[in-house]
Image 1 (tube, rainbow, N blue to C red):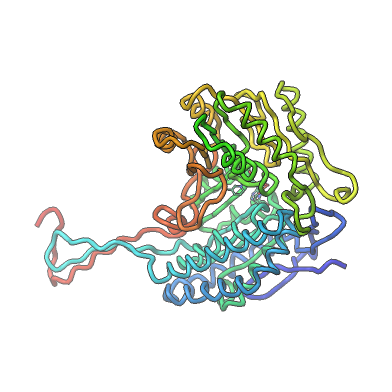
Image 2: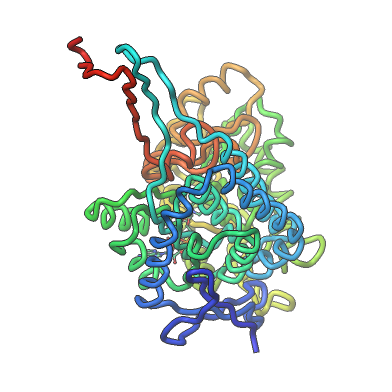
Length: 495
Ligand code: NAD
């Protein structure tokens, strides 16, 4: 019998009122069930939102440094349990163990960072034009948030939302992806163990269209922080906009790496491999387009294919594996369908292009690292997010051509250029239309102390993570306070 996990509502672990459950499987071997979680219905969500609402006043008035102390303890607990949690992330999501541990490390980093914000959360104090009057702006919490997350970062993305949401004084109902619910539950268990009062953070499991949508549009929800596909993000933005709710959406990507003729090719090849095939290409920032200067195209391709051919694909918990499975059968089918589309469009399949179904791969969702060459920028495989281990190599005539190709998609999350020329790098930095630009590094590897998010169809609303313009802007509203201690009526702009 697989272990069963529950929802957390008002500090109590409970099953769904309906008693219905969802199974979570190991994508490296679908016969291994990681656990079951409640398939939550409207009653469960109503109770979770009510609990978060009731807890709001107490949490909001808890001094922010005290809230920070809880987050600090959560960071310590996560660190203590990093190995166990990292293994669970790998078993449930499929990414290789070093990446599973990296996922948890990102959650730890965010917990420490936001714990520190408890002693900052700074606003502005400016002089008044009037006598004996002061003026300041302060951040204040918004209320109850719905936090909705995808499966590709089972602990990091939830942490990116939970910690800034809570440090700002909001309360939350968190709905993780139904494909990675057990890792999310373990994360919440540890956060609660750190000393969160009941109701401040609630967890409801369930699928997107039923549980997620009901939660996001619930009248008791003041704000929504969503990460997932562009289609769902845009739908939620429309629904929530009509309901006057704050909403921020982090969505899909089709991220380019530009390789210039003056690039260090071995470095570019290494970066492109990690960018395209890390996490089996299932990162919003995955490098799915490699835009290569025509002068080095042949040499780059030879080196890239040679390295990609050597990647070992298998269960991410096994040693020596470079790439794990994709998340489930549905995703495997989607990726294989795109490979067929690429062939029909006339791109040349230079490597991979098929599922792996023999021996150790028989029960999992494994796809060979796949490389298309002779890709034209307008092809669907160069325009649409595939979210799998598929790289499209596109030839560019020069820097300006490469940047036009890079920008010629509906997404704008991450981007990268490999060059040794300072002028090329400065032009790319200026002209790439993306939320993130890397120079001589692949499109993946954001650090938590700066804002994270994209342009165009990659992001809507506020950004995530730290720094100026980061998640605290998503989770707070500015309030301006004027205090007159002159003892008389003073009229601004008139006296
Ligand atoms: P998804 O949009 O299918 O689901 C994301 C979350 O939303 C899940 O919890 C899901 O249950 C829920 N959901 C689905 N439909 C819903 C609805 N109608 N109402 C409310 N909630 C709903 O995405 P996914 O397959 O889980 O994740 C992959 C996608 O996420 C990719 O497009 C990827 O690029 C994107 N992503 C973006 C970022 C980023 O920061 N930009 C990070 C990671 C993943």
